[in-house]
Length: 286
Ligand SMILES: [Co+2]
Image (cartoon, rainbow, N blue to C red):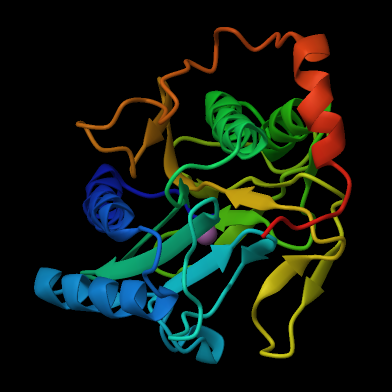
């Protein structure tokens, strides 16, 4: 069953959503070459405690940490480690959740470590645009498939693939509620969106193929072909006047790259094709 939240409940979810986004923006400032992913975890855990919140991920299905931290070819659910040291040129996905007053906040960003290559900048930009285009479809009367299709079409038309094993989700009194919000699908299909529904939209784009492999730690999902992967997530309430993005800070530019999703979506494919094509071959730079 898909729950429709009252206005008061939406405000509680906004409270949690704003908290989790501030934590992520704070954590982003800690990302630099040489830091370990474990240091990011301990920093985040301290900040969550200072807020008087509870980490939503730690202990969830026995996940050991507050932070999912996924570097380069890792897609999601990377476990923080004192042996994993970030290097200039890496991209790192930071995904976390908190519980405040029984209501969940969940959000993710992918952050460059030092200076990154142009193809990786493009991956981050297009993944954010996919999220923005998905959010545009998150309005009453539309269907979940409208969100899914918007994400998939923009990703694939830019030469990327979308991950299928992991999907967005309803969020509220639990971290994962109905409905599932896949990053692939067909317009006009899936559950109808109604005012008061709260969903997390979280596109995961790969430079190579969509296939996923889970490492021996039972958590870390990586691209099978070693391509790079990016992930952004916002929580959205369906309201009478479109999408209400609960995790967007007032201080935040609509999109990190400064690009409005409604504009400039027709890329000059020919000028992008060079690096894009090379990038799509499975390889990892060190
Ligand atoms: Co989520």
